[in-house]
Image (spheres, rainbow, N blue to C red):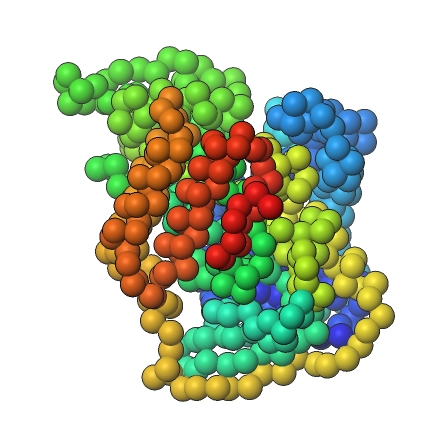
Length: 482
């Protein structure tokens, strides 16, 4: 059997490695554009529990997830907690040498009792981010197990009814059609492409690919924010964010309109950082920061002053599945990591810190298990070059355009108004839709992003009008909430 994985972040690579461990005869390829994934920007703190890694902590984790689901624990929460702990133990204990990869060491990781889970990867020279090291480890593991890497961006899922017959891959040299038996969406989140977010902008996220292929999405009205999104000194947004646990000796200063300086000490946020509790209070801190313009000054002994802003952090808009990984109404398509998000496991509620990373490992495990248990061995990976570089889609260059930045600014401003103001959300969402329709008529090189943005606003309208909780489903050209 041949398996094509679209995306080379943690979820995609973990799926590839798991597939080859389960069955070395599988023909597995990963399509990668060679650019940074959100994985390398994350601190790699995984949450399988509350304060210790004993099996007895599973129920505590289940109860924590249930707290945001009106205290209703679900079988999915139980499965996620058990599988998350199992997979973290698997990866932190695996010896690649036992699988014939003798030159690759074990994963580096460390743990403190005050954390909610282990931190995988080795710190890099630029700071404390461990994602780059972790991705390199998984990448080397996959290559040594025989996983193939194809460089390019997936720009189209080609449907034949409920079957994905092929995908279109574009790079600097050509446009190709790739055929496989089974496909896995692992191309991260759409958040960085439509909001000023801690996420990076993907050329084509899994959500956009699914939307183009008329595949069902859900979770549009579930958005998570970060109080310390990276920002320039003038407040301009940058991708990435500061880890709150590493700010425990910092003081936070708010902007003072009277003096024009950052000279108002935010004692409450400073105390929460000191006690490692701030990540449980992001929404209330966000409101306080936004009352002072949304930009703050981080003052840390021995470190040059840094600036941060309230940013979009995690979109729960994901591909709908039957069981957390198998895409709904599809015979041969799966989704892992941020492509599917955590909504299936959390009762369609806002996730907790560390859960998204754990979700990468859980969905990689489940997908690899399901594919490995399928007794179908048909075609190897096949690639057919269609066109030369003169035919490349202009969408590949859209991220650098001023219109693209304007789209993100408009979406972010209206999202913040919906989430943090006390106004009537239906009217706010209507203004959002009208603004997009006025400014972005006929922008074909990112029209999908404009249409998805409108549909997200329409989901907020639907939630307001019908008092409906998630999941609220959306699909190109369809009504919401069906």
